[in-house]
Amino acid sequence: MMRNQDIVNSEDEYTNTPDVPQNKSENTNNVPDTDNQINGNGKVVNYDSHGSISVKGRRKYMEDALTVDLGFLMWESNNYDYFGVYDGHGGSEVARACRDHLHLLVKNEVEKQARKIIDWEKVMVTSFLRMDEHVLAEGVEGSTGSTAIVVVVGEEVLVVANCGDSRGVFSRSSTVVPLSFDHKPDRPDELKRIEVSGGVVVNLNGKRVQGVLSTSRSIGDEHLKPYVVAQAEVTVKARSDLDEFIIVASDGLWDVMSNEDACKVVRFCLQRQSQEGSKKKSSVTPGNENEPKSRAAVAALNLKRIAMKRGSQDNISVIVIDLQKLHKTSA
Image (cartoon, rainbow, N blue to C red):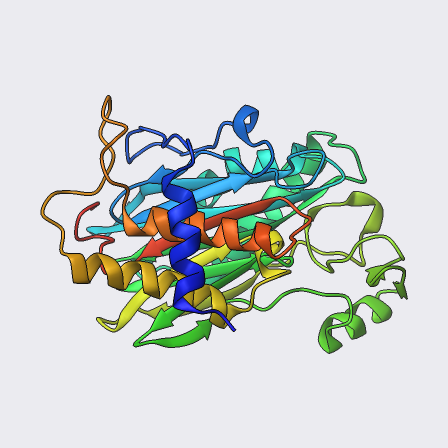
């Protein structure tokens, strides 16, 4: 059970830790500096509308990557923002390729449409498959792959595309709503698909495809095709004034935290901002590292710290999106 005091203690620890925020334009990709992702100490990306952090944690190597691209697409006078988390395995090459290219593929697929209303499911499914083709064409090591979860936020719509066991969840009117469902080999529909394609699921320190991979969908992993696929599952929701926030994270968070606990942490942080009031903009400005961080950034770092305290053994990447701020201060 998550108590408010646990969150306060985590935030107190945060305020005494020399994590340095990145000062970058909101229209650029905010990619954490992997040289600083050691022993759980990463750099916080911090704006009024969102905060993110990506750290190596207790792993020997950093294989996660993330992309934040505000205003990556303008379509029919509507502005769209892109958030992506990629959890690599067997190496970081595929996760970094997704970080650098997947948002561009999504934008390209939208711009190829002849219709004014975006068919988001078709766009996302096609983009993920093309990302997979790109990785294979580049000759990335066949045993290397990455999960990918992408959230696109428009002024009227939320789009989530997931391939693997990273996860998205959001809060609407204090109700926790899953935006994706993990692709695990023992998920009944995934198990059936794997077996029909001629594969097997073996229990070797957990259920694994061919006794190797603990997720049943990913980009890359040529050696496990056709059992492991790059087909994205897509969720599209209309935005509402009741929408509060979205959490997007790799399984380094979800291995040790439930959807409900994670949302409680974020809700507490965002409510504190409302209660205290905001006399001046919370975003960090260049040359002023002492400026207070946004509650979304505090929430992202709190989630990371709690996951570390609970014993997460994986890389941890988290993006918190404040839907009450997005397109009010960043558009």
